[in-house]
Length: 336
Image (cartoon, one colour):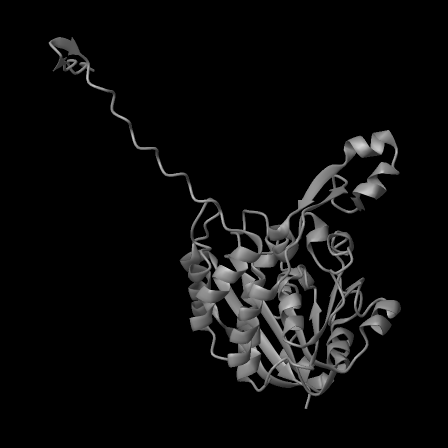
């Protein structure tokens, strides 16, 4: 490349070079919005998509979520055993060397690995349309809660919320003072297979939710699941499980099963159990248990793609192909 000739200025009869041009600094890349700030921003964007006033109020509760200090956990290679820093120091040197860190910052605390807790707003808006008038003084159970963000928002609305899950990391992720209480309780274990868990969960709920857990692909996979632990063993027959869901509810209470899922892999590729989002139990089992089935495997794909665009799921390094790889389906039932 040819270098441009140096221009000279005459100053006091002497030839001098002009002062160098000062190049304007490039604007710094905007810091990624995470944690509470992301939830507040996304809740504001989702507001126009929500029909129910009380669900919009729930979204506004993102501004009242507490700040979370980063905490560090450790786990083994299989992510089956988790330890706090104090617990890890009690292990042998060889065991400590094999551990991997899990940094629980504010983003992970509210969302873990399962995506925005604000996606629950759609399931709540649907059940609001079926007659649930709000959460104040209501009892709510979330089966397979996976993260705490949506539970804390429901508790801020005045609900008494219980989450139950078998993920071995969650008791430690949410094991510090202040994580529970004020209308929120978390239970570790298998419901309803474990009698102690069943007793701890109790009954008399106004709403039972299950999102991205009760999928046909997890409960009754159409093809072998590799590794097998990606499938879900409920520990009881289907009929007994549905009867246990019915027994959780007070008369007039609602059950909502809401599942998001991607496109299934072709026959020559490994089966994705999470990609079969249909309700795993036939309608007749719900009716036999006593449920009034209001919606059964109702398609909600058009809306969830709109929600995905609003939350930016189609942008960034992990962008989704919303038009071809995101679907949604739901079932809503009521105890008469």
